[in-house]
Length: 268
Image 1: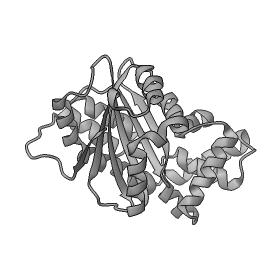
Image 2: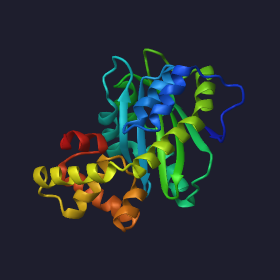
Image 3: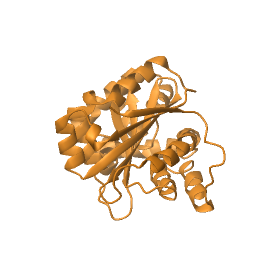
Image 4: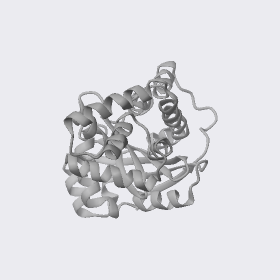
């Protein structure tokens, strides 16, 4: 069984060096905030991988995935397999669905720790954790706006071993800061004056390279590529968040892709 915590504010007295804080500040203004979050984390505790996942109606979609140092970036490959075969065995999927139903935008961060040995599905454990030499996953779930859930997933591999108790304590202290940095990045992207221009440019690209997409599917994909979440897309297009999820699913099926990272590769 995973260990679970509920986190509201950073612990008093936790000190961070200037380099770490600089990376966290960058996360609030960049198009790939998770990459800066991973750099920030590694100033405190070594972590090889980060996977930023958005849940819409309980269904996860990877928004970003990065590897640290010389590690191959296996996050998109692992997430695609996880989503297809194992997500229903994950306590985090059920928790995200419950959080989405409660719509608690100001709720504390929820943290879950899975050591590889705790993975409940043997195939999940063997194909992803053992197969990719991962030793554990520490996840932070939070709701930036009602009905939208994000998970910040941190993975360790055999190079650094399991998350030790002291490592977990330090990372739990960072969770509220990571939440604020990511939330700031989301709203900065929505408010950026460059966003409408980038969206329009991507829509034109998709019209040329993916004529099988409907105009509405192009609109949704362009906004996903710009890092806009489901609620932001729904508000921008004047449709329901559930319609955004349906349009995204149809578009990804037509493009034979899984997740935002593959969408970005298709576009560029």
